[in-house]
Image (cartoon, rainbow, N blue to C red; front, side, top):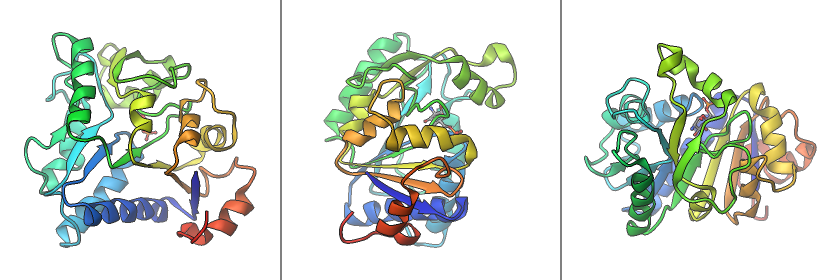
Length: 260
Ligand code: GLP
């Protein structure tokens, strides 16, 4: 696990944007896994800005988002379809039909989850998976106690997660109870992973993910099993880590080094 600690949110976001840009440059026709949530908003704004400046293109990429709320149609204001269109897709040159999300309004959500998993495999898997981190240690919507061997499926959201995402919905009763989410084993099959966490509210989850035991209680700790996982943090999100000096020593200013 590479732990890159940047002084503030802007530099952490820019570091992740660099990693995305390198993957886009390296592989014409690469496949990326994408995340949602507040943390990703400045990242996608940076990608859009770089696209507008002619520095990067999404014309050759295929994307798969991690998750979607069960019951929400793509045009629902709280859906991740809408989020992705508004913060990223509508402002870039991604080709229509090459940005995938599970359909929350599928008549049979279980079948949709299985079909989504199959679609990822048909595309040859994911080259770079972008992740955020829930305050309770979840990745995508794999809530604590999710099987580390899980595949794309339906998960019941915890009260904590529903509370955290409540601001995206007008009324309490609109907040969904279930989501279709890539599983932890699905995520671990990505050839490379980059997780972005910013702010003090993520500090405990970051410490559990990086320095705690591998445990279903902290789903993100499963990333310790991945050979190419990069964790990009701002100073606040890194504030509960114990080996901070070592991470700074190996990756000064969050930069790459010959040996990690
Ligand atoms: C949601 C998403 C996750 C995201 C998490 C953190 O639950 N399903 O993919 O990482 O929230 O969100 P935020 O970045 O808003 O803290």
